[in-house]
Image (cartoon, rainbow, N blue to C red; front, side):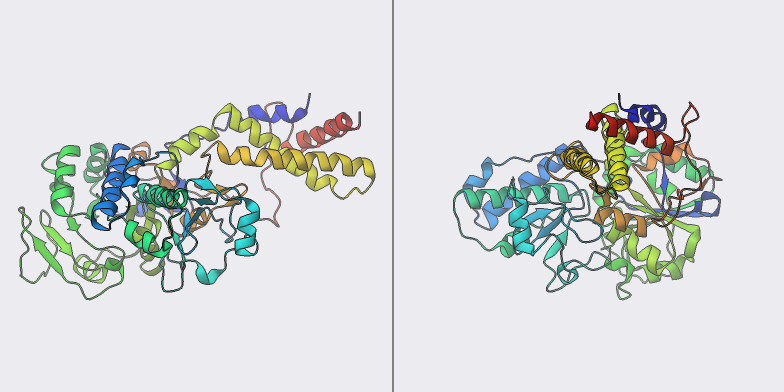
Length: 471
């Protein structure tokens, strides 16, 4: 019996609570005086039926307004087809997952609803690396010549699915079409449950709160009335709607306009942002001037890493919190016995291969060869357990995804929902794990209940496995 089973209790005992707040950067809540929020998928969460609705409306607009074939009505939304953070090659009409080093994860490239073979992908891209010049820039923005578009928000799930369905229809019927036009036609103007307890808790602690959203006031008002109550505006010191993020954070030209309860726009100049009032548009520079809320005493939460968080952390020094609803599902999968067994043995195999590859005798090379085959057979399973087409939001096999790398750069902390704040007091400090760099040794070896450190157990695993193969 291979000794890797000795590692299972160690890892299982360290299962992750899905309601944990995770830190990329050290941050103490005692330093935060002002809390800011986006609305969609930060304060308000929606059922999966909304994605179906968005898909159906966008599909029907293509047919009615852009004269796409009537046969597209046969396509329905596929809830588990795509994951957030994927890239779409507009010229080649390919949907794929790219890691933090711009490498395509082979096996995750789709044309329409069907995978593209690894050989064809390598032929098209002359390998699996995507050149920097066709990627979107560091902030996720695209300019002329950038043909790789990344889908970062949750509303993009029906968008990606519709693109794939339309591509599938055209290919099935051998219809010649321009992929660039399809991408532009499908771009969805997305239609836009916060826990009352979180806002109350912040308010009772004397924290300032503000809301900056791209959604219109009547939509936000109906949602907040339902979630919090008719007095929801009393909880926020400033409310800004139709902000037009991310240009809100960079464009100094747009002034604020006050909005009446009936949605009418007033013409008076804004000299201060008042509690209980609703403001439209504006820009961050004017917001900072009128409120004086600057720097690391401000913590802003949003779900879109680029539109909500990038400029705030890089240019203005605000602390940022990313809301990643997919976390709960992925953590629950990682806590399963199946996943723990699979990853424990995969890591053990990788360590054994790394150590044994230096031995060039035929017997050792035969053992290593068998391990390599087993490892290659297991790797697709680590993808499929999360999503059969594209795998985890956070990893391409062992590498971080492009999405994951941006998350670590633009978000000080991240969590599945705002409700996770209820588990922490306002003196709490979040510490990132000190994970060793590649050239560092672990400072704190883990120990099993039996007192054997992990490296010792891996060494025993290697010896047993060598004996098994040689016999």
